[in-house]
Length: 201
Image (cartoon, rainbow, N blue to C red):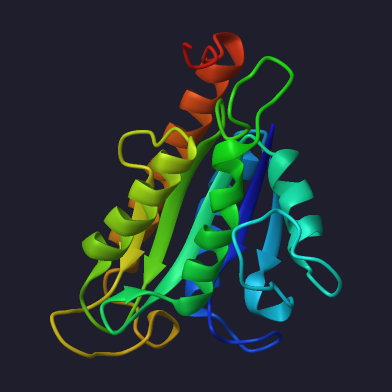
């Protein structure tokens, strides 16, 4: 079983990413459960605007999409900015929109039988809003969202320190992240054993 974590930080590599640090807790839990984990830091790639799977010359989304389609688990990891998902996360969601109209050989949307979850960090409140926005979009696209398939860290309300600068709340975020990983794997295995059927005509 494979998982893809798309880190939607605004910081290009090799800058340290608070969001990547918390997502790493989830990744380690997935690995302990036998899952191979792949990473993409989206801001390092020229992901063109658009809602097609390939937006032409220079678009670096298609190789990322290949990794996603080779995975049963997708995790969108994003910081909170101005109370919302990052602009990079929004770009990724817009590109995933193409999957709504793409089907497999049995007529199922290609996101069917894949599970998804969200990791969120921020030095302001708004985590539940961010998680709700992304999970809602992923559900529309066809991903299955298990119960409690998210973790977050912030010290809101209001602005505060960063995840890497303050140890408060790490234990809760890590415990929740391990539960997230377990729930993603459990539902992914259930879908592998009993796949969703194509939508009725």
